Length: 195
Image (cartoon, rainbow, N blue to C red; front, side, top):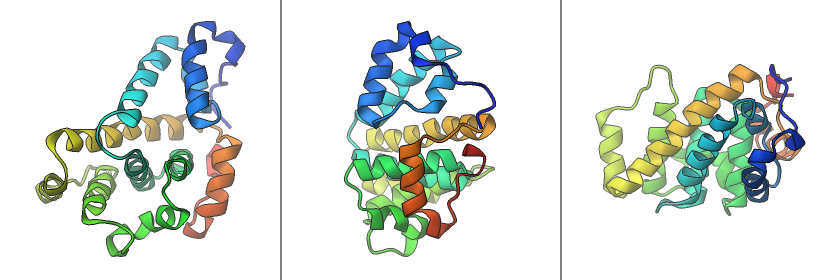
């Protein structure tokens, strides 16, 4: 159960257009944003940042969600694991490939480019950060400078979200919860504090 009660949509007329856009994109309003809405300026700023990072640029949106899933796995945030796995599927990543992110290094489902990005994500999600020069060198073999910035921006955004949602014990919404229960439980996924 979320430690701070989320705001209700009707309490946030100044955020109505942004919340409509988020709901249209995700299919639901994330509890994390509704909790964040106690500070509307933060919600606005974060909404803009998230839209830029996840919905623009050159890196495939499905890969961005797999990067977010990998960094969230490394950080241990069950809320973000559920969200990003479901979002990856919405961006046409197969359930088989989403499940294989746990073993991407040995899986034939991933290209060398995808493995380079996921490797950086997993090592960046560790504490302390375990990204080494060779990880970034391998990334640069497959991505332009802008694309590498996009990869690191996704990782960094989920660094914030992983800490936010695990600290707040954000209640997981039903759609990502059902998706994760169906698709990730064989890998040990449980909602835990996000019930």
